Image (cartoon, rainbow, N blue to C red; front, side):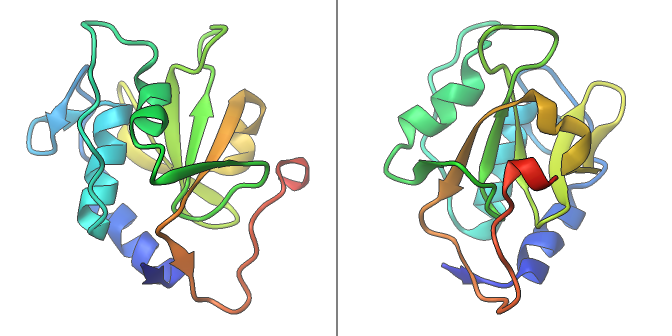
Length: 151
């Protein structure tokens, strides 16, 4: 799917303000980080397969990319429309994810804030792995993927 950064930003802006809900999958009620990612890709027209989840699946972020490995490719740089797996709260495994929007921002969700845009630099130290969505090609001629060291 060929997209401009403005297409990605339009989808993100339409999701800002959706409340956080633990294990949430309905944007009318609330989403968690996995629900946010699934809704983001659904709105882009790139649905992801269902992920088998436990009651408190700390591995849900990792399961998104492993259960959909035909759609995601592990990369060193950050790509718009890609997924960042983060280690939040001092855990040893990724337990949160965000969506890269461009060279500066990511889409994130937090308990009291809900879905919001946040600077990549704020959470860059928490990033464990980065994945590019194989079906997204950015058409903006000036766009370049972000090297984590330069955030």
